[in-house]
Image (cartoon, rainbow, N blue to C red; front, side, top):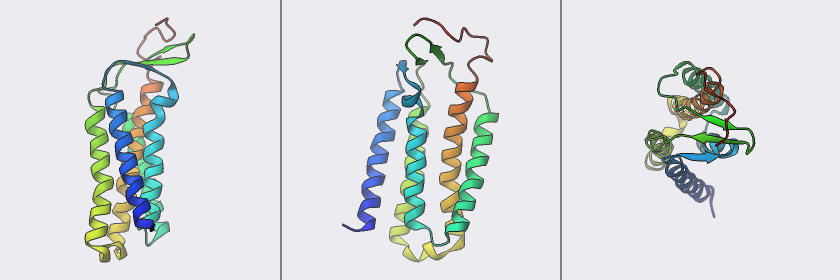
Amino acid sequence: MGAYDILTGTQLCMAVAMIAYGFYFKKKRTCRVWYFSGPAWLIAIWSAVVLYYYTEYPFLTILCFLMGFFLGMGIGLWVKKGLPELTYCRERRRLQCPPMKKVMPAYLIVCVVFASFQIVGYHFSFITHSWFFNEVLGFAPGLCTGLLWGRGIAMLLDIPVRGQQVYKDI
């Protein structure tokens, strides 16, 4: 089994997991914080696999990834519009998540971004030697990862700010 087969298998598994998370958060849920942060960890691992396979200039790609990550995290923390209202149950140590309808389209966009690198890299293998491709290869996954982490952290930090009863019995 070659590295490309491992990359393809990883891409398929991550896409299925992201779609499953999209269906999971489509309804009102009570979940642990680990379930809530699962997609962010999956996208971080997925980014590492894609970057490791395709990068020709690792320092440039990692620099662009970090630039995209911090930009995405800043945007995710700054834009508060459309954040779902979470509540935390202290007794059960669980978050109560409202239905999040925008999660599935966001995860599908992430899947398309990551799949596009594999399609372009497969059909135009010479493009991996381009500096621009390596910059985009680092920046796009970094931006997706940063936006997801930023929005997640903003949702968790925004609970007491809204004046909700933070600890309530569910």
